[in-house]
Amino acid sequence: MNHVGRISAIAAAVILACATVQPAQAAAKAVSASQADTAAARQVKQLAADYYMSNARYEPIGPTFFGDNRFDDQLGMSIAPAKRAQRAADFRKFAQRLKAIDPAQLGGDDRISHAILDYEIKTELAALQFPDHLLPVNQMGSMPVLLATFADGKASQPISTPKEYRAFLSRIKQLTPWIDQAIANMRKGIKTGVVLPKSLIVATLPQYQKLPSKSADTSPFYAAIKNFPAAMPAADKAGITAAYQAEIDKRLNPALARLAAFLEKEYLPAGLDIHGTGALPNGAEWYKQRVAASTTTTLTPEQIHATGLAEVARIQQQFAVLGPKLGYTGPAAGLPKWVGEQPQYMPFKDDQEILAIYRKLDVVLAQRLPALFSLMPKSPLEQRLEPELTRATASDHYTPPSADGKRPGVFWSVVNDATKYDKTKMTSLFLHEGRPGHHFQIALQMEKDLPEFRRFGGNNAYIEGWALYAETLGKEIGVFDDADQLFGHLNSELLRAARLVVDTGLHAKGWTREQAIAYLRDTNGYSEAVAKSAIERYMAWPGQALGYKVGALKIAELRQRASTAMGPKFKLPAFHAVVLGDGTVPLAVLEQNVDRWIAESK
Image 1 (tube, rainbow, N blue to C red):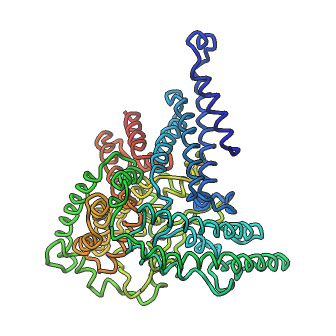
Image 2 (image 1 turned 90 degrees about the vertical axis):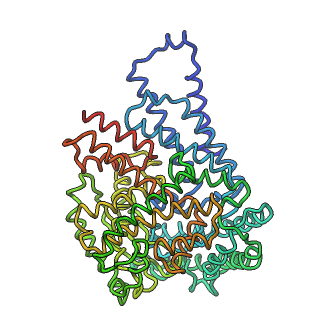
Image 3 (image 1 turned 90 degrees about the horizontal axis):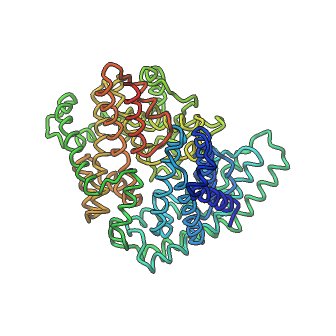
């Protein structure tokens, strides 16, 4: 048992012993209510701290993403069966410790921590019942691709000091055994019927064929060596360079070549002619677990599918009103396809023009958003272009600032062909990925004095739900006054609604990949290539796309509830402060927080 495990076991034993004191003993050892509160609070704080350290050591990449750089020299081996077994054992102990803490004895913030821990521990234990580790790579990414994007030191992992260079080198050294474990897992998956659909392997293979290089100096993992800080001592540069060259040439490049060869020669021929998780062994239950984890609700795939169809119909009704303002007179369902064919909505010649518009929009939002928010992050936000390595399969996304404030939050825009970049989507996209979407929520969370597991963590439904809700605020701050940008917003909403339909269709209702692609083409007006890329994302990440709309609908519902209940007392900045004030929470906890705020206002 490791150090954290020993602490957990000892603490659990102490708590359980206290919980089984007989009534007569309890009377003799009675404590005041405030002392009891303090004892319970200390227990939940210690559990939260142990829980975070367990997570950080199991998946050290997570803390790096959130700017906690203490684990930047560790890679983790969460795909190894022995590590998963230990993980399950640790979480069962966490569950025992949590059960021994009475939430009624906790104050507000500790009570919220207790509720989040309860949800996350149960969710993780449920997930460990299913063999995710047998599917360690897909076209949306894996550990080798992720580390390649870290390698220049400009993304989530800083690489500018000798210590930081050596930390990343340590991760590179651990990547070779990770690759060999991934290959072993996929071979077991072939034997047990847990294999990616063949279409996803075809989409995945090109990335992994690009990763091996003829020599270290042409490897993507060598990028930081080409950008040494001028002030770094020559001796350090020489030693670090030699170490990187040796590791990449002797171990990493051969391992990457093994992975690429395996994917092409063994895995691709074994690829399954399936389209969703439901076709895998125990796939129906596996997908239900992923739905629950993604939405933090008990909604069934059937309920979510029906919600998606209803939302698509609602948005198309708005298209019927908006279409004539854009010069379109056809049926509402055809508006997205028509807009996509109009050259005036693709006016760009190069990616720098696109970046300039995002930067100008950010200035406008910084001036207008204080009217809607009393809580805003201190961390700056930058706009950058997605690196070439991941551009072909990446989606526009956000990376958070570092905890020490040295690295800003970044909105990464994906521009594969500037001349085909749709300007109508830009405002809504930036509201989602930048401010007041992910940047407000995640940066604020990192700036608050929260337990580490809450400061550097979160769930899909709240994070993506907030970002999608944030898009709707464009109407109130006047950035959707242009009909084309309002269309872009509604079209963005339409995609999130359509995702509810195709994700559940693929994984729970037996839809084929081609059927789902056709639905996106007909509903969203996508080209074959764009629809294919989107559907293959949902195939690779079952359930992930559900959190956006489910979360946004819940936040909008709570806003309406509060406005109706509070009348003139309702203030939108105060509502946003309640939603953002405790960091990421499951939707049920968010609902409790808002209901408590409404009750207190009366």
